[in-house]
Length: 187
Image (cartoon, rainbow, N blue to C red; front, side, top):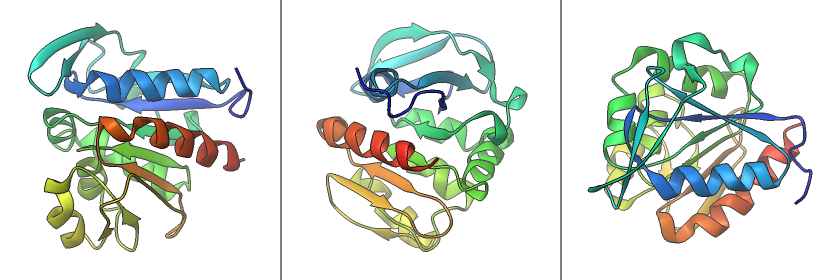
């Protein structure tokens, strides 16, 4: 265990259903292993139902807070896991969209994988950023002013905040290493 993230609270924002389990649990463990404090946030403070491969039900998780109860000032960084349904549901929750935008506006680093960047598009914070995602999001990202790349992991420090993105679960090792590095560099 290292201590790069000691004393840092990291928000993990997910919908109450549809988050890809491995994209939640693997970065969560990486933050914990680096000495950080991962905190689960959802639209409602009800159970979060994860999925495996977007179809099979996974485990359930208890969020610490509803997103309306927290602010960007409470956290050092943000992780947006994927799953097709997860960000699609989040972008319909005004408090979730506002939280993502507030984190970016405050200059806090954000890490997002797979379909997670849909939340960034909805929050209007990809303009001028270089990022990757699940390939089906590339048109949405380009239409929102982002520069989409098909790469394992992309870290972009432009536009006032660092954004770390990856395409899919196969990229999790690189994604976790990059997000820990970015979160550690952010003071």
